[in-house]
Length: 117
Length: 108
Image (cartoon, rainbow over the protein chains, first blue to last red):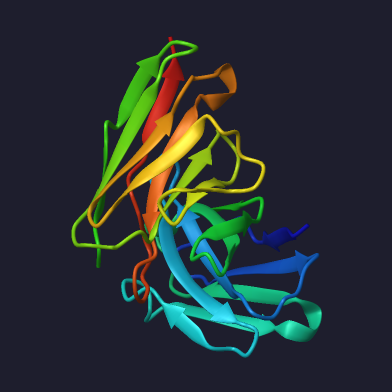
């Protein structure tokens, strides 16, 4: 069984940097893409980006200039940084595993990040 | 980006009803289509992958079909615990992977 647990600051001021970390328990960390997805309150889901255990990344072009995803495979962790946040970045942020069936099969519990002055 | 459009945006049905949700892609995505169920305060849960494959542990009353641009999620006999929001998601070719806007299913 796979479990993803995430943590990070939940309240930010405009222009600050969002920072979240996700740790993976259970099956192999290698061989998958580890992703971040966000959901503004009451709205739909937006894919932010992904990383594999070797550090290869792909980002959503809409956020690419502000996003960095890093991995520490030895700790089975990956992280998200989003710079220069605004109120539009207020959302629940999820980490998830992208598996061989091209789907997100395991998810973290979600972290509500609120951006407010 | 590939746009995903779901319909309806919400529906109300009774226990035992057959429920159908549709998802249309802005271009052909073969069968690279997944369905998720999300309950309030919870992360999405994978129900169907590759258009028609039931994820382990998901009840058999859920089924998916379609290919190309048009897809369907069917709940054959709606149960109380199926009250949730359902999202489709495409994973065709390279990212960004995109989601439909969601369909909220309520019990009458």
